[in-house]
Image (cartoon, rainbow, N blue to C red):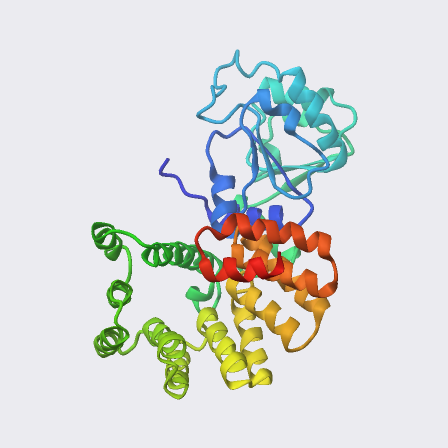
Length: 405
């Protein structure tokens, strides 16, 4: 449970996700390979952790990495006695045959002490040549030497991590660790992206109608500036809301989030667009590479200022920063429909927003309206029905949907 993958496993994870090579056969009980896959690429492999799952091994699998634990997962009756490892089950042999017939087997860090595996490799006649990696060819056991044929290869290596490093270099994959700034490394970016995703979910909870004690529980999970956002939510008087924002900005003058939210408040509630634009710009000055702020400013520029060229530049920057932001994808789709009249490109962004959030009533409603514009009424009705199902008590949206129904 305490073990963590060495750097070689991260290189292996890159190979499993970025190439057509998807299979790992292992006698280990640990979770090193799957841990590396998740930490590096957020990839979910198919784990064959028990022989009863052998029929799920498919040589045609081209999407997920497949990890076959030949002696089971450590939580699923692991095989560790001589009797347990005497022979592979017929089901496992049958499903491994197409794999070994289709790809070369690279053996790393294996001593060849398991009767079941060695006998299987010796008996199978359809396998491709094996590349058997070892530190010193002279120290290979007699069992291994008798297994290998003239078609196989013995490769001397300095160790797993260094071998995977060299293999990774040959494949010309991107560096795992940024040589100039470790914070720009893919590992760090993935971790930050996950943390931001969960933080956004917490913020969404704060925007719901929840009780005071629930708000108090939420406050400790969010940054300190968010306390002012919660106070604004509880207040109904716009003048008092404005005062809360001003107090919050005084207490947190570096919070680009609070500046951005205040800009939205000034736009939507106070209708003070000149002042709002100043706060959008201040938010972007503090954090120019935030996708949400760029997307909100783009929406403001096209809907309030009618500066569509500048708005599109901010939409594109937002999507470049965060291509899977559902709101920005949806808003840009509307922009392409209503302003650019580029329906083909717009449809791609409608579909992207629905792919990311298929149960969103607004996205389904917007796409339904788009399909009505294109004259595809039967398909539009499908998405209109979905929008009604997901709308709940969203009165403004329901009123708009009834217009189309």
